[in-house]
Image (cartoon, rainbow, N blue to C red):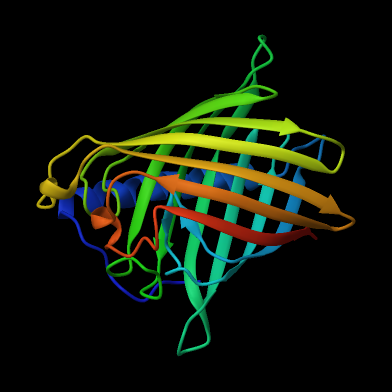
Length: 252
């Protein structure tokens, strides 16, 4: 799935982003190499949601979306994920919204925590609510336990606006029963570099609290997301600072 519009940002930032994306693809290829003794795990999930929110901002212009997620976990700890999303546009029917690729390495430490390192690349089409089709690459590192986790992500050209930016988040997940769970995350976006949009770049908070209930092969999702600040960095079409998102997903 490809996007139809170009991206903003400096040539230097774009070059760095492309180089990181190439490294991510190399890591993904390594992750897909077969292990001699034990086979890896392949997963596929299809889902529909009433909105597609990224760090509290609607990137689907408040419209419903459908997503297919493909994943591969190698026995050596490497993994790769590919996600494609379609959006129900107002006038043109179902169109491609975004594609996300990420790959990395996860390992369990002696403390019981899981350390995770990787790179992700996201590209949006001009059917998103962003001011134009945009792409950005992030490198991330995190630690996760049974209930709590944290991650720091750094981007060299965040949506083409900030030449360098970081996002830190704390995550929580609690199983209420075999078929239900609550989760949440709180994040902070911090611009690190200068750009022509410097006046619009300020630290912003985002938060999300969700509930999931499984019924047979289908899982029902409900989440409330919110954020601080304005939508300037995302194009000015955030569709409210607080929103309720509903969805359904199924594992294939």
